[in-house]
Image (cartoon, rainbow, N blue to C red):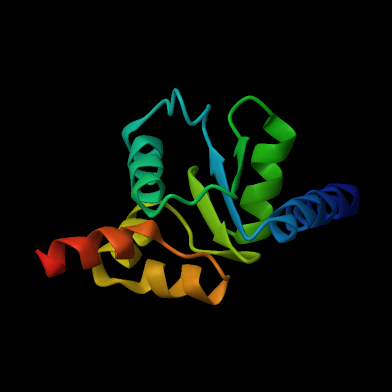
Amino acid sequence: MPSGSRLGQQQLGRAAGLLVKKDKVLVFFKRTLEQPQCGFNNTVMHILRPHSIRDYKAYKGLDDLELRHSIKDYSNWPTIPRANLNGESVRGCNTLLQMCQNGDLVGELRKLGIHSTLLDKKKDQDSK
């Protein structure tokens, strides 16, 4: 691979790194939250929604080829959607789903100072 190409990849990776570090919760989707484009994107949207995470950033990675390559280079993970918590990649849909199912997602959100309203709903159900 020519050195210019490698330098270009490093610059793209740095650009994605700057985006990822700006927001506590960031997700790269194929299209939009309203039109997730595929089942994996739809699942990520449905994982985040019950937690009532209002302060997160979503980027469309399919329309911007440079952004798409940038996030792949940054996280060393080939697919979208990609979720990031506090600058750390939690990879794709399956990892986020597993974190949701085993309770790790609530714990990670708590570390970020984000209160999951899913806990409030669970408390309400337990008290009935």
